[in-house]
Length: 504
Image (tube, rainbow, N blue to C red):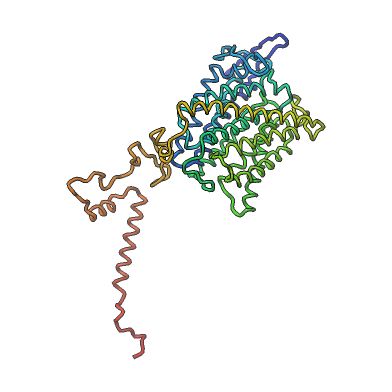
């Protein structure tokens, strides 16, 4: 029997001694992996809803954030958001390049290494700008987009994270509650997506009532992976493996389930249940419960799925009246969903559920509702200002929008030189020459000296050399049917032949 030795490390601060807990560290590392998985899940969710000519680009816009944002996070992003604070508004660059080793931190990670906490928060920083990409589908250049997400993460996300979650963040000390990112992630990305879509303008082929969704199974897959990944997003925000994490977990699943059921019921009442719409329902519930999942009872969590879903359903029903082209409804689903959830947190939160929280308006503390409104207005105003200040200079310097011709051809081909097609076979790839991969060419594309293929020989080759066993069976069945039809035709007597049934 192997002997396992566990080493318990301790860190002594001025006030207390911190003890490493391997269970807490394992839970936070698993939660980090869950949240990181949400970015490719978001790519699938978005990818299935866009036009076929832009699907590869849409996948890339989410995927590239995993590289660019985390490099920024390691170099200086984490230090700027959660480093030793220089004021109530900003962190410092004292911890740039994560030079603090494996030490524990008495505020952020009292029972596991601060490196684990840095990685966990880095996954939040990754998915936030990725959410914005859903509002600018099919019309923003790739290089300006990548420049935008670096600047936006530094100037918008990092300070906002410090204000709400930092040890001396001014919104945190004011009393604004945001357990897992309703304000920091969803409101900021939703507002930024709306502003970005306004600055870019509408798509050339924009049709308010049309749907460009070309791969609903992608969207269903993305929804399911987001639902699972939200386990780490919300329950991991407890920062330890505890009963508080269990509360956040149950509330997360309850709100998602309520959102799904609510959307399906409304669809059924209106006559037809949409699969793509049913995918939006649980996402709305998940967004709504995010700021409150560690502060409310599970019964109230159902309302965090029902109320935002009803409101957002009818907002999307009449979105064609909007003058802006927010392609995948980032502003409505994430922006409005985050605002509704943050506001409801001020109504239903209870101090008995979380000692770090507060009682809400329904539990004798009505001022908490105003603290939530202060956080909402701050996030809306700050995100809108940052996005405008970044995109306007880019627009008039290097340019951010494709030409109409490039937009009609699609970013897959214009930006990446690749295409995703489903013409002959589902999921069939197209090479840069425009020829389907593994497709037989018969007759050859190049015909010289006015030579024309022999139709009989071509048909003969197609019969005697089928491409698959299924085609062979089909050919044999067709041959037998033709033979039987020919034999039956021979047995039919002409119409002028004497018929004994006629009277003489």
